[in-house]
Amino acid sequence: MDRLPSADDIPSIRPLMANGSNDSRRHQSIRLLSIFGNQASEVIFATVEDKVYGFGHNRYGLLGLSTDEADIRRPRLNTTLSGQQVVNIYWSYDSCFARTLTDQWYGWGLNMYGSLGVRTPTQWSTKPLLIEELSTIAVADISCGGNHTLVLDTDGRVYGWGHNKFGQLGDQSFNNVFAPKFICDSDFQSLSCGINHSAALTTRGQVYAWGINEKGQLGCHPDGERQSAHKYSVRNEPRPVRGLPDNCRQAICGPDYTMALTSDGLVYAFGFNSWGLIRGQMTGIYYTPCLLADNVRFDTIAASRLGRLAIGVSVDNVYYFWGREPSTPEYECDPNRVLTIDQMYARYSRTNKTLKTFILKELVTKAVNKTFTMTTTTTTTDVLNDDDVYDSGDESQSITTTLSDVNSLIGKPIIDRPLVCSRETTVVNQVIKTSDNNSNNSSHNKSISDNPFVSIFMDKIFSSFNSSIDSDIVFIIDGQHIHCHQTVLRLRNKMFWQKCRSVAVEVVNNNSNNNNMKTVETIDEIHITTYSYDTFYQFVRYLYGFEPEINDSNCKSLIKLGKVYDEDLLIDRCIEYLIKN
Image 1 (cartoon, rainbow, N blue to C red):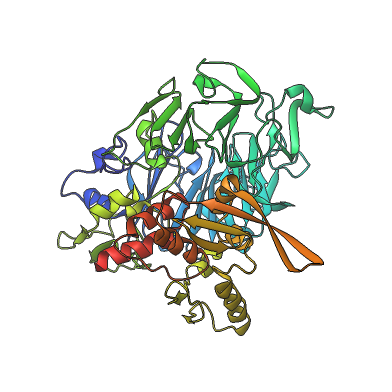
Image 2: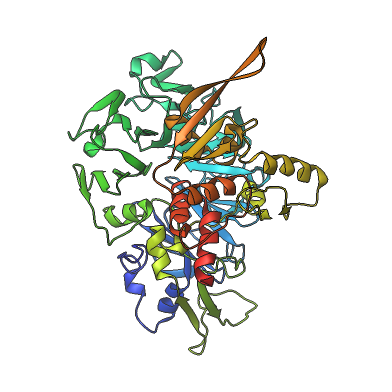
């Protein structure tokens, strides 16, 4: 398997990797890496010892090092973020944000339009500032645009702050916002920001867009969005994009264009066609959604709101690249090379930027993933400095990888999966262990909570699994049936539920208890041919909250299902099984 293109393969880091140097050993412990800015000019990384470093051009203090010094050529310790257990870093054109394991948020960089969300009148801040109002929001999704940011909480509420001259925040105004502001309630499941426009995907598969529309970013002609009080074509509230199917499962903003991926694997795009991002021609504007390639079915797509490169992975695992480099759609298929779509962006981006922050290793203090064994010896110091991670040649750090075969099964390095840090996931991770022998669901050991009300609710969920009495969807595998409930599936995994809805066949079931009264029920039937009965039974059973019963015959397929439907906990269970066996 290829190494991550975020370490030795990146020119801005390679000179620091001389064998035997402190920088080299620091590189060995990198667990989180972000490369961004003009021409990949800023680099921020965190180590497994919870130290955060930065180096690069430091435009607007984007390295967060509490200095406006330019061209910092060697990694310098970030004394504000070190020790805060940073789990992710996000960035807009001129601002950066960090999220900690305890859901504290920090912002630094340019603040001219309120981009940092801290109510501070300063033009910029070189020191990470705590965003107190954001720390009270259970953030499920975040997207940073040119100089504006939108977040979605776990209840579907949208908040935003920053530049709003073109209505890109969607708050029905054109005023800049200097702290997280409630925008609207929604049924959005994801958000995406371009430079001056925004888009969202609903749970029903619709795409909404708002902000500037001078280049067709919103999927309609600019004349249709002219406002007498504004000289540009703009929209300051979310509205559906016309001409798109209602079965979309991804919506992504580029700098001044928008792409949508449907559940059928089709990609639609609209907006400014710079460098052939929408069609093969190098220029032009597409005001309405147009089909990108009707002969390809995509599994996922990715693009940067600040770059000119787009990437797609087809359902048969072919990589497609289009935009600035290469300038026309191309593909390569190598069964021996497995990369995530984020790794591919870093590899094929002309400036070796990362599409988002790479999560390479877990925090030492977290210690929940058994994918590698780690021995770390550090010197305790009272004052943080650049070299306090490795003060002597006697210190050692060894990482012994024992799961190279598992890596190839998952299709990406295990340590490349993001840390789970959302408040919503905390409950999901408390898996309920049970033994039902494929039929009896009455015996189970509930570890989720001692709350009797939760126990009563979970008892009902358990007893409803594979019950034909009130199910409204049935999976048929090799003549055997698995009875489920669409409401449970939708709440548990919306991606899986949407896939079920797209392939289900409705069957009318006439239930007559007597000759005078008949009740008509509609049941969705889905025939499964890709997976065995045992594999699919354990997967759906896991979605209902049961501990999956993993064995040699279903482990690989369960890992694949976990990858397809973003069920990291299921993948972890399979990894644990492989380690033990």
